[in-house]
Length: 227
Image 1 (cartoon, rainbow, N blue to C red):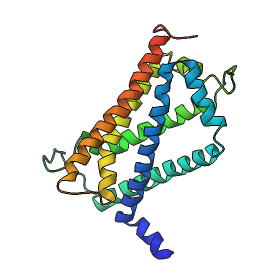
Image 2 (cartoon, rainbow, N blue to C red):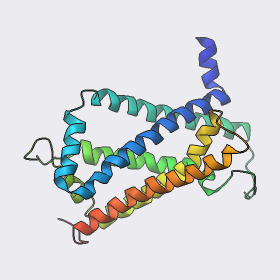
Image 3 (cartoon, rainbow, N blue to C red):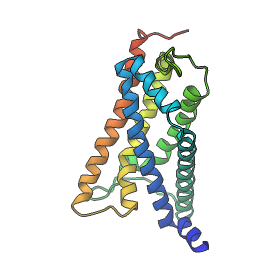
Image 4 (tube, helix red, strand yellow):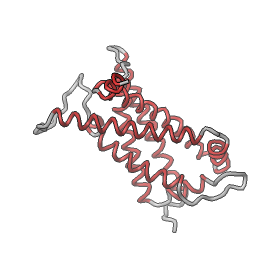
């Protein structure tokens, strides 16, 4: 047991845990955006989807707790590795430069902590808005999540913050997916480039889709702030 604990506390072990938890969260985002896109089919379809997810799935509490633990573990190991790297290199570089190819250093990779912290703030607000706020009943059963989402995104300042957070999602995934796969040993002279390309496509699609939903929801309200 001590050997296993020591391994996961090591640099390699931390990277593996970060990679596994990050990849799990990436898969969740794929499922989450797929469900959210149903909002374009109208309130009946979207609220039916919400009802099935919330009331037709007895494992939902277990899934939510598991997701929370994955998020916390991902944050914990990422912060621990960041602090460890800072201690190992106490003297900061005077000026950062792009290493150029074949280096993977980019804006996304050098701002992972910033984008991660932005997402943490967003997640707290997001959960509070859609899980711990007043709800509207839906006549067919469950809650009117369609109305709740559109009202939450009726304020231009909220939408602006949402777009900023989704940009952070895209930036985080842009580097995070390929980094996670590399940490898990999925790296090959030929396939690496394809993996990096696929990671960018997924990052762009997920972040872009969420942005489109936010703007669409705001425009559905006539572009005004609801009282």
